[in-house]
Image (cartoon, rainbow, N blue to C red):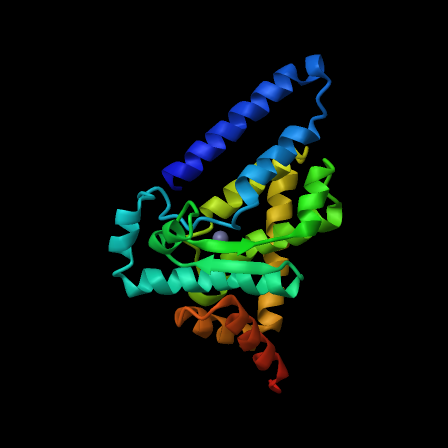
Length: 230
Ligand SMILES: [Zn+2]
């Protein structure tokens, strides 16, 4: 997990703990810190692809970028998030595939899929999130892991996703076992969605490898949907 991500998580856990301790005194609802964490960790991008503890700097990512296997894995991981978000009607606004690209776009981490969801924003502003909305986001969060599992039979880049999701769910009151169950359930849902739309997924991966714009990626998905697949 990258240092930035770790710092963010440490900060939000600190505020969580603080608000849990002070909450009763200040009459704070326990969902408020949970929603704040959701916002901090989730609103900008679905994930920051990490090198799993091996470092999170642009420099390390730049070295790793020389490995075509690593680049390939990132594209397949992010395409999973992108396609599932698209299928679940969450408007994707951009994607990055390396720390350098992310930095140029003013985002933290090592790449990810950005989105702009007015519905989520208004629910967060109102201080509540519907079960349906939470389920959609859980599925999108697990989609990177699901995609990697389908393509490579293992995962390298999902630690951030799982960590963030676990943080949000526990803050919303899920027990650890309920949280793990939910992660497994949504990973399976994401996997099914990807399998059902496999030709779209492959078209999207190809478009993203060519660094196509979001609009071009969306048309690649749309035109592959039109093809008859046996
Ligand atoms: Zn991810």
